[in-house]
Length: 233
Image (cartoon, rainbow, N blue to C red; front, top):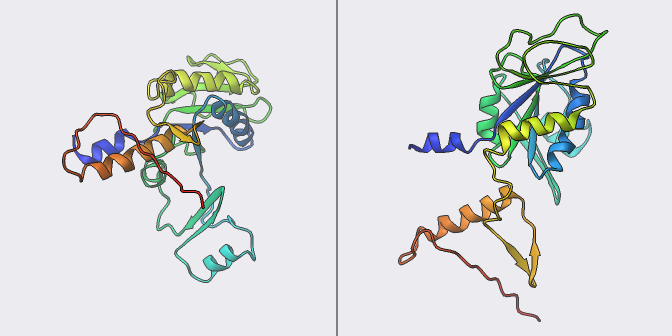
């Protein structure tokens, strides 16, 4: 298996929440995200914007001023958040965005991207539109609506984010992540077990194993123990 294929296998699955204008896509994503996070999954989102330019940072702030002054890329970092604004020469596809920026997640939810070929969940509200967007789309995996439809996929109410989260978990997440499997990396601080999210476990494991590959006399596949002893002053 070449390096490209190995990298592709590590990429998280993508679910596209789609629907016509004013169908309630953002509202439903806001309901769905807590349901998935509460199950222990790390989820990223991608929102497609149809306009060529839009305001992302607050006008007048330092990062905004850097970008207006000509910076190709601006990163704002704080102890609990990191934001990136970067020039783009084209409207990147979901696949391109996923390959560049989304390696450490369990799942990506996109809002929009109705023309992409990822599994889709359509939001449809009666009284707003007369016809569905994805009625004949073989990528449609679920319909969230307040109207009765016979479309050959599971149908959920507009407030049933928990039901949709369960569908996503069963079809796309459990096969990629054994939720009953014990953590492969544990962190203890002063003998207290510190819970680590899966992507942090994988990052630490990869860093340590990568370092050990350069050492002689180290057998692969064994258990690894690392201790950091801080001397008291």
